[in-house]
Length: 106
Image (cartoon, rainbow, N blue to C red; front, side, top):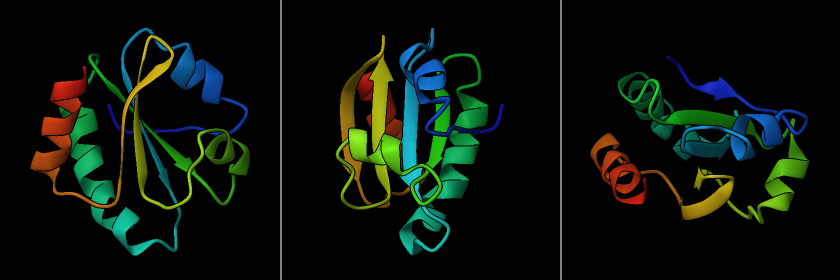
């Protein structure tokens, strides 16, 4: 499975009401570090298929979700489990660091 594009309208259904943990990536097209993280998240989405959902929220198109989460800088990553934030981090990181973070949070 690949990453799931989430909008302000689908945020609750895709993230808060998910049956499995969700990693949410708040990003923007113009953000260099966001583009660095993107390919790693795509690979992790395939590796965690059925166990963890990787969702991406474009902050320019969906400002309400970002504002509700208090996102001030991007990339901002949050892990939701049972509808609640269990961990978050900001900034780009290599795939191994992201995988370790996800493993320790789920």
